[in-house]
Image (tube, rainbow, N blue to C red; front, side, top):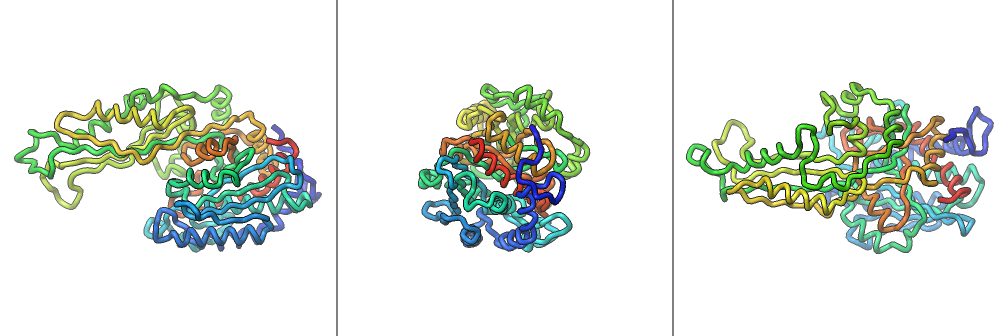
Length: 478
């Protein structure tokens, strides 16, 4: 893969392109504009902020119109929180249609959570723009908008080289519960030849990568019940089963000594990464002590399924995690009881070819096998689950994104994956189009955590990469 600049050179510096010059000319306005958007606390998980989600959608729609997008609509005709759709046709009717997906809602944020600054009063400190949504995902949607402007400026055209569509969802951070309904209601408008997702990142600033897959997820809650009320531990302890103890036994049985998940059939459908992918991942730099101290927030050691590297565990191996284990008394002092119930919250991250429904079936079988006499068990699924999505790393779409990012970043861009989950599989399935990722988030951007930030030079490079991408896809298709 070449990283040689392919845009029209400005002559300003070696390797400079018309796209990079256009981005640089708009950088100051870009930052000010993004700061204004970040001041809107569009927290979809909090009903008290749903009006702010609507305000964020209206703000984005107004900006897109001002930037020249011919068709801009706020979609609020389903149970989904307001989404924004925009479309800009190419001059060439035969050009491919590319849909860009992102989201304008953000995670909850409050000073009391441990922020060192007000989360919705964004500020620039050195190279960083700090504030909730600076990276995830308002910063990346703004990056795409800047990339469109730079593409038009660099080419001198009135429209993009591809038919561009944009969908900014309004509730991704609260689970995209109604995205399927939104897609069904607007299937014709969203029809496309390819999907590019902005809600993603790279392994590191000095190790540029493109995401080529995300894990799926199954979310469950397991409830063990014994007596109808808490019992006196002196009068009943040792004579009746304790739901907390028995649920702890189940949790302890979830993994074997090699940390393999013991849910029946859990690995039956797992597609391992290719040798080429494992070689590419092995070539990526990984400083374990620095990763533990930084991105892993002071975790004291790596751990996981035996026989796999940390990247492989995060990207290509399925997992079972205990998110919470609750039961009995947790207040000051002590309370001598046999608790009447206990609850465990578990999530399972899924990889290529795993089916959420089959995994959930296995979880129910595992719980049944580990429920002792005298205990009733309930398995509550947090929805149908999210399928994993794996890109074709050799496709024109992925290779072109790697090339466009390489031009902008001045380095070879290697394939990687991400361990998180999102609605990408739903998008690809419902719209029947190949999907790929383009994003420049860093593990140190503290998304979903206090003190979120974005590295501004990377956002600007990402904008340049999108500008190159539209021109390249217009030339070669998807």
